[in-house]
Amino acid sequence: MAYPRQPLHARNGAVATSHPLAAAAGLAALRRGGTAVDAALATAITLTVVQPPSNDIGGDLFAIVWDGERLHGLNASGRSPAALTREAVLAATGGLGAEPVDALGGDQAAGRAMPARGWLPVTVPGAPAGWRDLHDRFGSLPFADLFADAIGYAEHGHPVSPGAAATWARGVAGHAGLAGPEYAEFGRVFTIDGRAPRPGERWRNPDAATTLRRIAATRAEDFYRGRIAEALAAHAARTGGLVTADDLARHRSTWVRPVSVRYRGHEVWELPPNGQGLAALLALGVLDGVDLAAFPPEERLHWQIEAVKLGFADAHAHVADPDYARVPTEALLSPAYAKARRALVGDRAGSPTAGDPERGGTVYLCAADARGMMVSLIQSTYLAFGSHVVVPGHGFALQNRGLGFRLDPGHPNAVGPARRPYHTIIPGFLTRDGEPIGPFGVMGGHMQPQGHVQLVSATLDGRLDPQAALGAPRWYWHAGRSLLVEPELAAEPSLVAGLRARGHEVTVADEPAVFGYGQALWRSPAGGYVAGTEPRVDGAAVGC
Image (tube, rainbow, N blue to C red):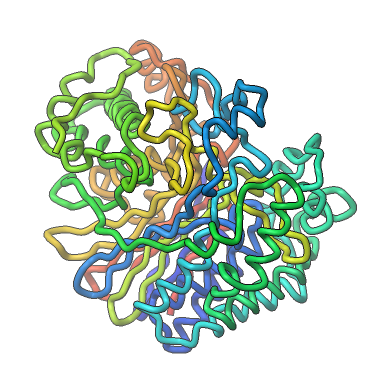
């Protein structure tokens, strides 16, 4: 398959995301004199209405902001209810837990896992507080103005895009067989006569419009301590949920310092745990010591795949809520550790384990403004429609991020009260010698770190512009030696044969969603910006 798109060049600012209507909302904020954060927030809030299978008001948010001088990181992920314990999960599941879910990748491939749907995996939504906290520090337009497009589309409806319709259909199919009062509202809000809306069909969500108005008017206070919080807690109490008003009232976002590794003379930045950005950095640290350009294509891909495996092995072993577990981030990202892990890459496909360092459904968007501020932002409810629990009368689904916890009591990421689970959504940022290049991201659960690796390599090794880098054919590693590749890679018989000769079990997959959806926005040496958007879905890059 081919993805023919040209990059966007813009002088005064740009927005790139996975839905054109949301990108237009961000661009409108820029045109009104808003900052890149204003544009990012208008985009993000609109995405909850036009792409609800992938993100919603009841989800989480992470962001990296370049303010013109330095980077800031915001972890707006929520914590588990105070009543969530391993014992509570085992009691609710007959003592066995649930079957592992493929979307998690290799982290829970063995044994039992957290349930994927219903109340048990619901954590406190962090997105509304994240919107407010980003605006408090970096916004200039009135907060309520950033909700106008989202409220309008929710109140009056919008035609569903083809990409959103496809994800919607998968999410509605996943709802089949879910019984219980906690799921009763889902069909009324998110289906049309019991089915997903079709491409171009108009869909309205007036309940979400009301909820967004309350968040806008109270700067999210109503969501955590007002009527929305009361309705959420009451629905949980009636239908077997653990989330309480106290859990909601205790929620806080956390400002964090982004972490980085060097790659080809640049710095690649991610947020520290509880997100899985470490997996991408660990892989890039391994690859930075190898001259990929000197290798034939199959060997180049072999090294990337094996580096990603090593990154995931360490991320799955060590990433957890740093408030409850000591995560050896500095040691994991040290050049010495990267060198030791690099030595493990051989000529054959491997199944690596975690090292022992010395101790010391998602939507993505990026935005930039004329003053040089740039934003990398990602938000999600995780699997399509998250938990499938919808708060009656409020029009939004709650995330199922608790699925990222482990049931092994000895694991750093073990399930427990008031904890943030292993999180898949990760925003990225690229600099060189402390000067900004720009934000990037690739959404898609387990695909995200390997998507980051492939996008960064295509940019710095392949010297591709952001649109060409996003359109380059991708591969996806799930677990073991299995490897999915896009048809364009399979069109090179010697490449596939070379990978198979090294022990990779290669399958050609033509489902674009498997390979993630990304955006990238670079500062142009000629002035202004150059942006790319995901060609596999309804993405849009717009500028002024």
